[in-house]
Structures are given as C-alpha cells and as structure tokens.
Image (tube, rainbow, N blue to C red; front, top):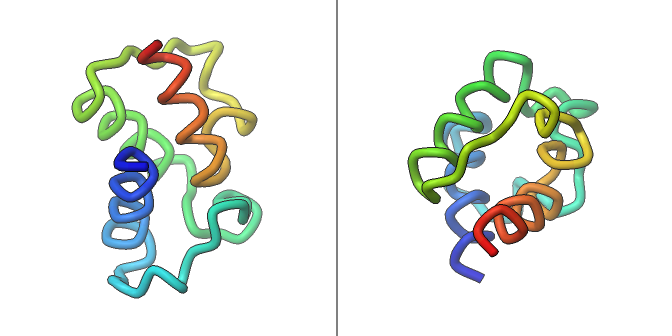
Length: 81
C-alpha cells in the first residue's frame, strides 16, 4: 500500500500540481489523458529507480508498466520481488 500512496503522491505533486487524491484515479491512463508526457515518463522512471532501488530497462519502458498508478505499482512490486 505504501508504494501506491508514494507513486500517487509523486504524480499528484509533480504532474498534476495538486494534493487532492481524488484528482487521480488509480486506473486512468496517464499518457492518454495528458497527465504525463515523454519527459514526465523519464522523470517518473528516475523517481522509481531512486526511491525503490530498481533499474528500469529500456524494454520495460512500455505503457503496460508505466501508464497508470495501478500498472506502476504492479511493475515496482514485480521488480522488487
């Protein structure tokens, strides 16, 4: 649960410039809705690598892993296992 809250908090603060948790649904596509762009994806990856001590490989930089809070949390959980 902590990963989810940290990821949501990061996206809210750095992409939506908000502190309102209701501004971001866990399943919404961050790219399709314009919440995050290509530069934002790179910043998100840097955050994930630094915060969780994981390495995001080039082939892992796909929407299935990074396009929603839910997919990001699943990805981080798999990488940390």
